Image (cartoon, rainbow, N blue to C red; front, side):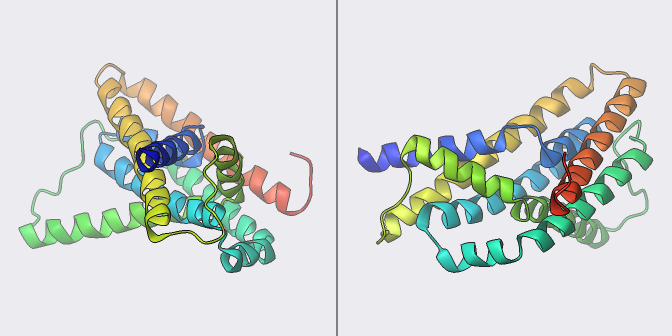
Length: 221
């Protein structure tokens, strides 16, 4: 019973940390509204894996990784800010297609390679933007404290696995919900409205990037 409760709380923690609107959420929504909900979901799954890694650091007390994150926090945040601005600019300059894009003369192998290449880029993008964000780690620390999820100094294999799998499942559940919900409302929206939403999401991501860069140089946000 305690094991089931621990797993449930880990799933809840992953869901809670993933829900607040941030750059990943904006990117997932944008891709789903463009008719690419699977691409948005893969991006979210990359973020979910990063959430699981950061949860392991926070909950299991991986001091070596935590020390590395602290030592290179400024460099990580600087790189993350630039990456967010890049994603935001791309969102502004790329117009949403009227219909999902097709490759008319594509072979089966060519289609498989294209899907693999695009999925790898989506997954790695979601992972990088999450893993380099120290705020995610801080959020897990707070949520774990509230839910009493900190594992003892000598964590067992079972407790460690339940924490990591639970956080991943909770985070992935949110990204699946967001991608499907955004895709569902797409048919109710006009093309001009989708394009307007796309610009707002792009500006939002750029804003996150600029805020990150300002924090690196100690400037007020």
